[in-house]
Image (cartoon, rainbow, N blue to C red; front, side):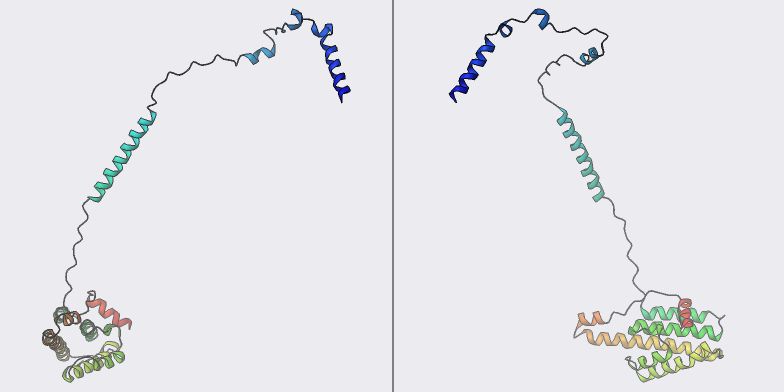
Length: 247
């Protein structure tokens, strides 16, 4: 190991003491070659620029401009939202109160009686439709959608006296042949059936009102809730007649 170290030391010493290593390099040896101006390598030096001077210290106001712009936008949005909240809402007119069932039926009967250009079939289609609609609104059953066979059992379940129930059932049975078979009817019979329809509306209305008055004294709130007649959308007499024709 020691012999190897000694050999290395002697080798380094011999190199250091040699005249070639110790001689100073000549000026020609250290002079860098000068490239001609037309040489292609000279273009590589054109992208070298001087160092830019240092920026003067100061406050950067760009963040302030952004803050002002954002604040203005938010303010406009808040103002628009506030104006939208304060806008005048369209006034929705409340629908008129529904016509009572008895008033509607009587008005339709008056219009039927005033129309003298109807043949028996058309007359009984309209008269039957008026009575069925009144029963539907008064007693909350789908009388206008039922056939006569379906309606007659329901009549027995209504709070009607025999003097009202029996003529109603007889009218329904007698009107069907005129409506569907084209059987004729004289004007006197048509007037009598119209009078019966008026009497039926008046008497059932009186019965309903008297029942409400008698029960209101004991349970006023409950009776008023139960006494509200089902209000159906108003329909013309022609619509009611068309419905029966489809049946």
